[in-house]
Figure 1 (spheres, rainbow, N blue to C red):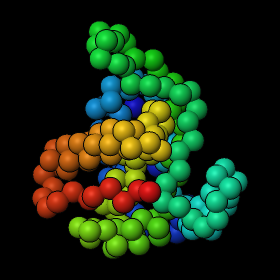
Figure 2 (spheres, rainbow, N blue to C red; figure 1 turned 45 degrees about the vertical axis):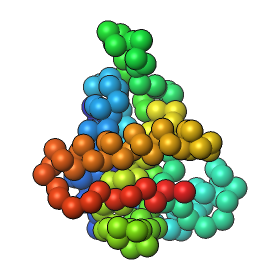
Figure 3 (tube, rainbow, N blue to C red; figure 1 turned 120 degrees about the vertical axis):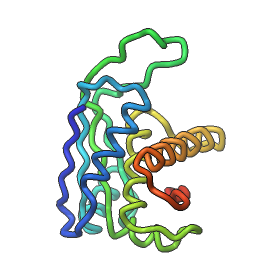
Figure 4 (cartoon, one colour; figure 1 turned 135 degrees about the horizontal axis):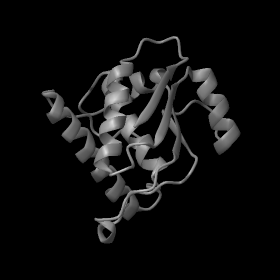
Amino acid sequence: MSIDVNNESGTEVDEQAILDIARYALARMRIHPLSELSVIVVDTEAMEQLHIQWMDLHGPTDVMSFPMDELRPPGRDDEAAEPPQGLLGDIVLCPEVAKRQGEEAETGHSMDEELQLLTVHGVLHLLGYDHEEPDEKAEMFGLQSAIVDGWRAEKGLTGPSPAPTVS
């Protein structure tokens, strides 16, 4: 898996954890190991510009996903099928928004924990998951929690995993 993390935000973030959880999420979703992903960490000004440009919404957001090859995880009927490889796309994260959301969350967690959650959220969006409808939201957020919990358990991290704060 080729994953690039580029921090352009001016804020110190745990880039290794972002890389690790992205790799874990993609492996768990059975994405081809030669696929490529880019994660860009930006400040609030850059995120707001992207939010306006692509969503016509003012103010910075926490995460945005820009799919490229629209890869999808193999379905249950495709257990033996070789997943296609390609360019997954870009995930853009904003640590300043993540910090605020982490502090405001029910469980109260760190900026880095929120960025890990947002990375998984972004990966799932790149793979075609959405949360517009209640059933979609339940599926996506359930999968997101399972991936974050699995990664945290594998890393031996204790305490409650961050509750979904993504809107």
